[in-house]
Length: 309
Ligand code: HSE
Image (cartoon, rainbow, N blue to C red):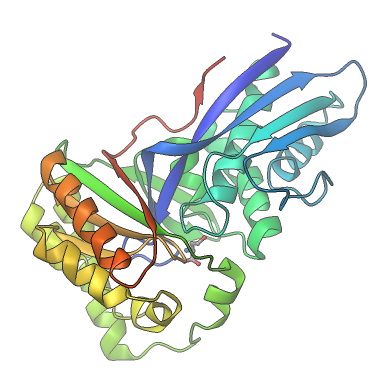
């Protein structure tokens, strides 16, 4: 195989109570890359679309190529590639935009080389894309983009991730308001210290979320979707956050919080019909103050990246 086209999905990180340790993949949106083998050993980006010229063609600074370069170095392979990156989601949206690019690139290169590594082994390289994009190699977007499903990062040192089964009727609504939040800034404003009281409350919810997902207990999922640590600090970065969250809950959502570092807001619902009602309620709430929001409704994407050409 000389050339391949790969889709990698957007992801919702943190999932209310699991800062830097929970994330899941959605069906859409997602990024697309086309990777072609070259006859030399150069890594080149030939085309980037969908990002209004905001991303660099410098392969040592782009989240799509850094993982490929690290991967080739680790394998000791000198194969060259040229890469087209087609962004199908906004940057700085809280949808794991850089992760989708990182995962799509390294997944495509691995396929073209005959899959010397399994998907999970591509994770450390994908995380290097995250480090380039936002200064921190967290895995809660890249791991679900790469593995699909709902993923827990149990440990960073050593890196240990596992997937959790999710109920079939669990749907997510994501609304992306037309504003940008820089992940680096959104991490910078967080406090380094957490009180014992909040740690205990958060641990209860983390455990409750996992049990709720595995047992398809929607009430337990709902009651566990409370974030005592991050949301109260970051809400300030998103105009109308509390109003949009209330609108989602009133429309029947199980819970609602910030998607990743924001500004996107996500809500879980039981059933697609409710998730669609929640989308309208959240969008309308933003519209009341003149903010346009794009809404996405999806089940949990169990597949992760896929070859599309
Ligand atoms: N866990 C990360 C954060 C996800 O909230 O900063 C954003 O990339």
